[in-house]
Image (tube, rainbow, N blue to C red; front, side):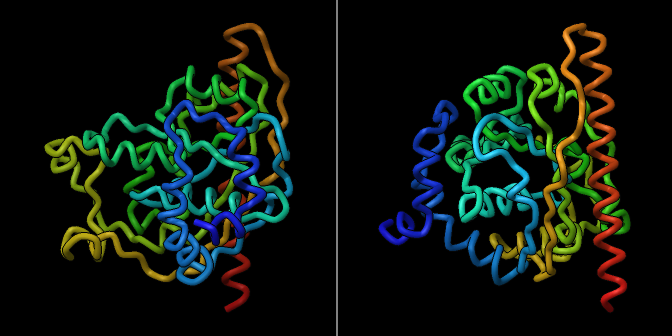
Length: 271
């Protein structure tokens, strides 16, 4: 714990002032920090850009592509922010968590900073000046087949609605490499429905290997880029708010896809 305090002093100073309503526990981060550090620096060798674009204080929404049936892009964002020397901030990762029936699993996610999606939860966090991240491809993005890697699934614009209602700045984030790290061969929808899971992806490791080896990942190199904030005007009329949310969702999706395409072209030129 003392080493954690030394390494993440600035993050802890900021996190102690953060909203604890949803069960965040820094001790959970202490337990998983070695694994997150290994994945970030050694296994995926994440090249992370754009943290300086985020506000040092006040509310903001980060919108990204999913890329995995496990929330690895979210945890890499979490680690990048907590270890940043430029802008250390705690991030609340808003996600659909209704499918999690095991209370221990739910508690673990909550302790790390995951928050069940609802308009009320997001607005509460924004009112407290918190940084929020969301991945609006939803459960469909959790089992994207390898053949469709790096091609986004249409964003759920409703996930951006609370931010637009509150006039919160929205920052897209593009993640390249996560689709290749855990390639999904197919999704067994009937099995997922039987087990009350959002998806049941078949990968080269899952479910053929025993736990936890079935959650294995290939050591692909990742690129994560926070892009410039979307530009929009806050509206009061309900119809206009919904229209703005739809447009911002499309703009975020377009900006992320364009950045993924740019990163792919750079990779091909480098070969």
